[in-house]
Every structure is written in C-alpha cells, then in structure tokens.
Image (tube, rainbow over all chains, first blue to last red; front, side):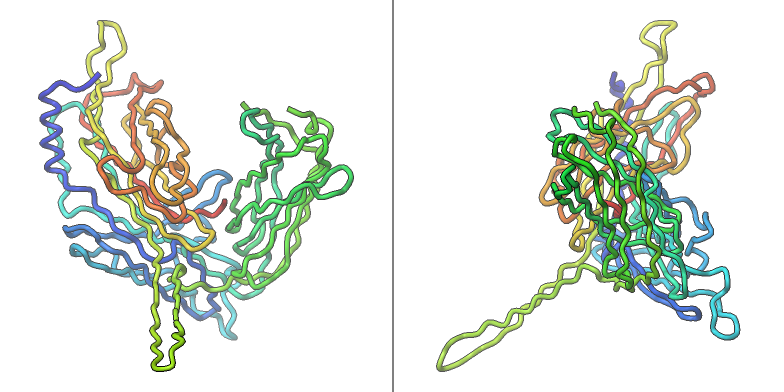
Length: 285
Length: 207
C-alpha cells in the first residue's frame, strides 16, 4: 500500500524543507589508549572534516561503552564504576563548522589529585574507559509536522571515539573462557562446525589480545592452526569468538586457544585454554 | 540450521599477568613512505623524497530520495487491522573507511527515544557493495525481516575495514524500514510522530 498523491506531494515539500543530513568525516583512530600515572594527565584531539558545501553544528558528548558477548552498547555516562567520563574534560561541546573546513574537539584525561605521597586514590586501579561521541546536526531542522497522522523517521549520525586510560599501578589481568559451545554447521557451509567461545575479562585492566587456535587430532598431531583475530575486552566485558572446524570431528580430540598480548600490552604473558571434545560432540554431521 | 551441543569439561586456564597498556598516538594510521631513488649517472644525481600520508578516516551519510514515513489508517475492510501505508523512499547508507592494519569498524542503529506504544519499526539492509572491505550486513533482507529497532543499538554492518561504498544515487547499503503493530496496539492513539534513528560508527573490538 502506498500513500495517496496529496500525501506524497506534502512529503516532497517536507523533504525540500528538510536539509540534507549533516555528516562529518572523523579523522584519526576511533580507539585510543593512554597510560596515565597518578597525578598526571593525557591530552588529545579528535579532528573532523565537514566535507559538505554547507555548515553544520557538531556536538560532542560522553557516553559509556559496554561490551556484551554479541553487541556493544553506549549508555549515558557515567553508568558503571569504571567509567572514564568523570575524568575527561573536553571542549567545545558544540561548534559551528563552516563548509569544507576541519575542526576539532580537544580532550584531557586527568585523575584526581593524588594523595600525599603520590599515590592514586585507593579506589582507582586498572583501566577506565568511555567514548567521545561526535554528532553533526544540520543548521536548520524543521520539527513541525503537519497534521498527517504519520510516523516519520529522521536519521542522525554519530561517530564513537573510544577513550581508555590505564593506571600503571598494580592491577590484575585475568581472562576467563566463560563459555564454550559446539555448533554443527550447515552442510552447505563447507565447515564441520564451529566452537563458540565467550571470553570474559575478569581483571581490572583492558585486555588487548591476539587469538590463535589449534585443532589437535586423536593421535596428538596438529591438524590445523587458525588465526582467530584480535580482541579487546574491557574489565567486566565479554566477547564472542567463533572458531570454525573443517576437519571431520571424529578425528579431533581437542582444541587449544592461545591469547597473546598485542604490543599495546607491555607484558608478554599469555593466556590459554584447552577444550576437549567429548563423544557427543564427535558425532559427525 | 545449526544445532548446539555442550562440550565436555572445558579445561580453562587463565594466567594472571601484569599488563600495562601502551599509549597510542591519535594518528594511528599514519604511514610515511620515503622514496630516495638512486640515479646511476656519471654526471648528476638527484634525490627526491616523496612522502605519503594516509589518514584514518570514518565517514558516513545517507543518499537517496524521499523520507521514511508511515501512516496507520483504515483497514481494507471494516473489522480488519488498520492498514499501514509507506511513503515511497529510496535511501542508501554510504560510508568511507580507512583503518589501521587489522582493525575493523561497525555501524549500529538505534532509536533515540522509544516509539509510540503499539507500533514498532524494523530495519533491514541490502548487502554492502563497493570497493575494498565494506563489511557484512547483519540484517539483510526486506524490512519486515529486519532488526527490531529500540534504544539499544543493533549491529547493521560489521567487519568494515578500508573500503568505500561509492557516492552515487544507488550506491551503498539500501535501507528498508517497516512499521508493524505490536501486542500493545490497544494503547495506540492518533497523532503525528517523529522517530529518530541514530547510526553509530565505531571501532570493532572483536574479529
């Protein structure tokens, strides 16, 4: 069912009044980490480019970043005890960016003044994080809608720049392989199945890891090695990783997963897990 | 269709480690290439440095005609469910992304505020097309089979690395909205409503 002609005409008029959707191009990394010692500060900038031929209003705001196994959320900050939002100052909150012009938002991350002796507040340890949201808006935005008994959808854009700061004071790093589930694949997929892993950061510091998996045969011989990619898990966060298997399950005895810290992490200490396939899982497709 | 089986005792080890996150500069994807050609000549040698800067870029927009709008009105026959009319529109989500090696990005969609009681909006997309690594659609298909939008973001496109969709009138990811009535339709009241959908581009934190 489509709208009657006069409604289409009115919508066309409304569209003409509605300026092009404002967008900007955000420059630089969307994922920034800092090591900030007690009493010190880290500063940075988020640059963006209004590539259009008309000015836009760009607002900056803070949100929190929450990792669930399958999706990320951006609740209003501060929403959890490790929110970095209380320690971030940024400016300007809102600015008019002329056409074809670059502009920036400057930010500063600073812990509270340390206690006498140079120690951070006892409650501050490990990694804190938040996101700086860059959201462009058109200069004109007609909100009035004629009586039309309609539901209109307006689109907005925002770019999330994750900011994380870690205190170099003692803190725990702990990776938990929280779930492991075998999923038999479709016959058409070419794979036998896949191992679904949910990894949880049970420590106090951000984990930035490269994952590798190895399937081992009943004979103890390595069948295949897979680079499973890089994961970043914030304290309390979860990530799901899917690990495909293309060999006949009956030949496979176990899978090994090794998580190696990326160069971002100063420690070379690795995490590992071994998954034993039992008889049930060894039933072939 | 896949089936799930539980694995037998999962032997897990987690080694505590003291780790410090190294600071990274804001310009993560800056590559400088210096070229200093040698000219084997007896008479004259000239050297010229050429530097190339590749910036880390995140850019998206919507191109197309019309605006997504729905009207809930008369049923086809008395006693039937009110009909839903859809204004003609043709909208494409377009994006450009340049990332550091090994990084990917995600585009999510969410409502800025809840919809009026009694109705829900779904959003489906086409598969991304373009040049380079333009990602994978997570809710590909027609609007009615799309993701149910709420104030909690849903992933629309994942695995975007360095790539671009194109900026032509039909380039990019086709957006297809659908309005449906919910079980609370009895609380639906007349009126005009504006729903705001926010698209968020962010760095992915998993493969």
